[in-house]
Length: 102
Image (cartoon, rainbow, N blue to C red; front, side):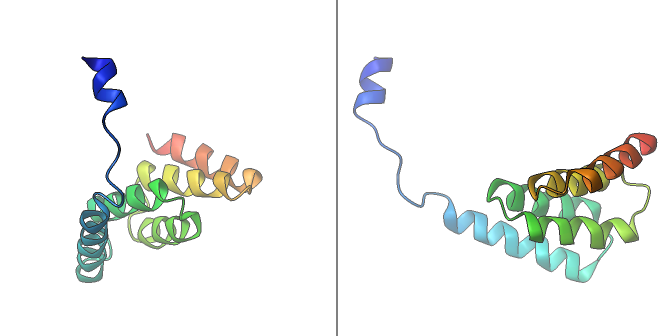
């Protein structure tokens, strides 16, 4: 049955796209209301990472990270974005700082 399922099913185009856009909008609204909301920032960062929107991810991680300087998770997100932007020297320094915050 597993083989039949794989043969006779196909992904639905754009499934979840509306939910993703709504989630992104909600996270951005939450950050507008509370620019230091780490949870909203990390939720938005997850969406941006999944869509490989690394410049935006870096901006969110930096902006909120300035307001929550003790957040290792936001530093890790910065390092992730920098690495994916081929800025590995900067990423290495940010990852090292994140490790000191753990």
